[in-house]
Length: 385
View 1 (tube, rainbow, N blue to C red):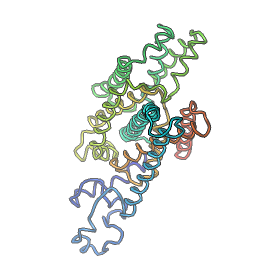
View 2 (view 1 turned 45 degrees about the vertical axis):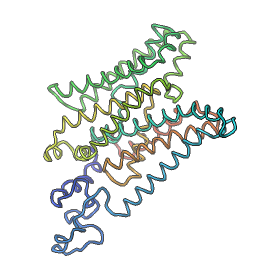
View 3 (view 1 turned 90 degrees about the horizontal axis):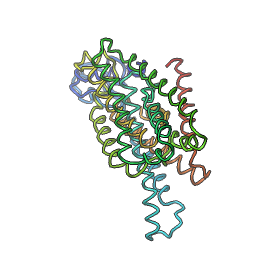
View 4 (view 1 turned 120 degrees about the vertical axis):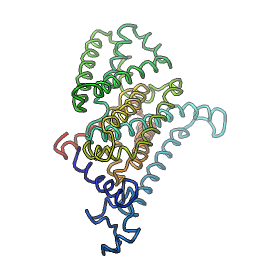
């Protein structure tokens, strides 16, 4: 775990038993060992008797809390503006007519897909980085995207272009979802029951499985006809156009349930971020808690990938921005900020590329390019993975 990931929450949680307040204390931003907040009395006896000097919370100061709310409301407002713009901007029909609302309803399907993908990618990436203690890696390392590409390629390899087109149904979506979640559960069960029980060994196995699936996928793609390969290529890039409204009755409840479960586990994630030894010392079963979080992460990532295809660096991009803008390590605030940032990135990118540059087909490529550049910048700045 990176030093900055461990240092800040430590004071907040260790201060809680002393002060009698929940973990995630406001004393995190105060000088170490004093437990005092800015403006509080410096006399030890006064600090002991003054409730204001022993308060705890997610932010160091009230100003930091106000700054978070202003930033969150600003980001969410911009995302809503872009979403409304995608629904009504350049609608060829007269406003208020039946045709106007029919076109807006069709565009609403794409906006719904963006909301689902933004929530899934943002929350899954933050939870995964907390569980693994590394803010550079992404859940894609577990092989979700390689399995998605292998499924799509195998479908057109064995059943042809007609078979690939026929798979745009809810049962096939559920099957892809089940395969991805099943792969992750297989790895997690090995982590739970294996002798090594090493999280990093599990990640290494995920990389190896992803590489093996990538090699098989490349081999099958070489045997396709040019027309089949052209049809397949459109499916292998992450795009909102890949989402079908028939998928929503499955995707939306899964995304809502897994996201709500992660939000309920926010305080537990704050403890996991302290590291195995500290979390165990605080009475948390680190292995069970980590596996529970990873299962929820797998559901979210599988839902997003099966819905629109691979988006490798979207989650990393919004998680990194969320860490920078939130000013806190409390997951109760990191999750909402990351979800709003993800929605802003998707709606803003699609609105600008559709109505300004008339090139909405390259949105995922630009997001991956920006996200990949941020990834390299973070790695070069940290000097390690």
